[in-house]
Length: 367
Image (cartoon, rainbow, N blue to C red):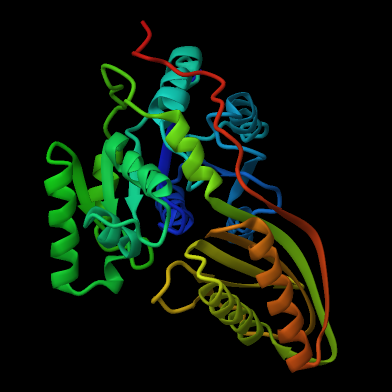
């Protein structure tokens, strides 16, 4: 049986992983290859999964914990993508607060399922908004423990990708690339934009080489790692908006994310990422906010008016989950009142991620 190429694109919350794997998937599909995607989240009801499926991709989801803690679910989900036809390539997007992926996911996958998969190098996207602050010696509005996760992700990366360069000036790009090169002098470092495709030719060439495991597992303090994850508030929920008169799906989605960004800033909660997906009939709108000081972006526009829509809200921020839930509840209620909409909130999940407990952790490559 021909083996499937397995690629993992990691990175901190809001680094642009979903946009990147969508661009990679379109590239491989245009070559005539069968492509499957696997997303991952600590909770259920993931915007990224719905967004990618709305773009026509075959997507499996591993919810409830990181890939490392749900290794068997990852294997089963990836296998299910081949029910009709075995994919040539599977692109995977781990949770943005997860690290130690080589020892807990890639090496076990190579050892236990090497007859099924060939692995590419671990690529990790660097989020400029937090990279500038954390690589410069700060914490980017996060706890030192959460910043530790960000740095460990880059440390274990085989390919580091400075993403979102379309938003950077030449000087800002050079400054960030120098910070990365100074801290990780032995790494392959790419500058790219998942939005525009700039730099993706070089990244594709980098992803085309074979995975080469490290001689030993990365040195990581799981107590600090667990504290870093626990410093983050996690929220997923659904919202039904309706009225007697039609309204712009794009404008209301953007206004909701604007309101949430103001509420989180007022509560002094730094976002990891904030994503809202709104759907009505066959149309979808997606708006995002990724860092204090950055604008809200309507990343997918529907161009429609509707009298009813279903929304998914995914919010990740540094702070207490109850405070995050309060910000969401208050913002939705305020927006609905101002626009004369009926709002029904349901399927609310808000919590702090639990301690990572990997299914496997390989201290060194297995023969």
